[in-house]
Structures are given as C-alpha cells and as structure tokens.
Image (cartoon, rainbow, N blue to C red; front, top):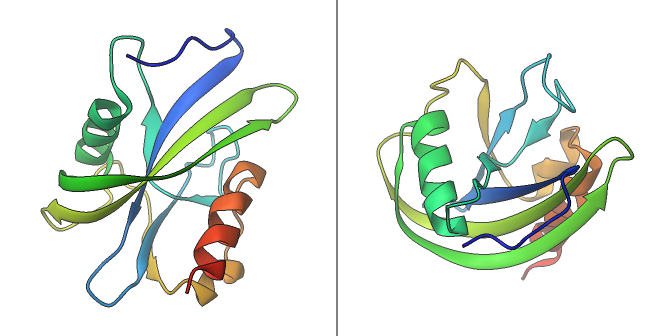
Length: 136
C-alpha cells in the first residue's frame, strides 16, 4: 500500500532500466505534460491501492510494453515544484521481458551514465542522475 501523502503531492514509481551494455533507458515527456519536453526515467503515478512494485510494473507495461522480471530499490526523492510536490520511489530494473518501445509515441534513448548530462531532466530527476554518475 502506498504511503499517505498530501493531495497536491504525487507519488511516482520510477524505473531505471539497464541493458547488458550498461546503458540506461530514458524517455521524453509529452510537450503538454507537467515538465513537458524534458527527458525522464520511465514510470508513473502510484494509485492508492497499489504497491510501488505493482505501479512500476503497470506503468512500464503501459509506456514501454515490457514486463518486469526483477527490480531493486535505488533511492527516493521528494521535490517541491511549487505547484506540485513529487515523491519519486526509484527502482533499478535489471531484468525485464519485451523490447522497450514508446507505446504512447514518446521518444526513447539508451544512454551511458556519462551521457545523461547531455539531456535536460526535470529538477526532481537530478538526484538520480547524480547518483548514477557517481556509482563505481
């Protein structure tokens, strides 16, 4: 069950898919969405009746056409945008079934951790980028 958070807050399950070459999958947000046009790690809102794992599995199936085989907690980030507060519950996803594709028409890119700096991310995602780039 997801933790209780204030109504202007959004609890988000985020997945870091890492391929056999060590590259990370990122997707670009739709122009009309909050933080539209920026790149992000795939995922989405945790519904009140869902666990983070269930929400992540549902979101990756809906967005990428993939099924999680294994995930591991990576970190959590709370960020206040002023108009919205987000709680990102981030998991690495080293194993999945299906070839990731932009089911909703969103562009995707497989990038090295060093190349993450070449992409514009929402402020809340910067902690993820920093941790990935500092990992040995």
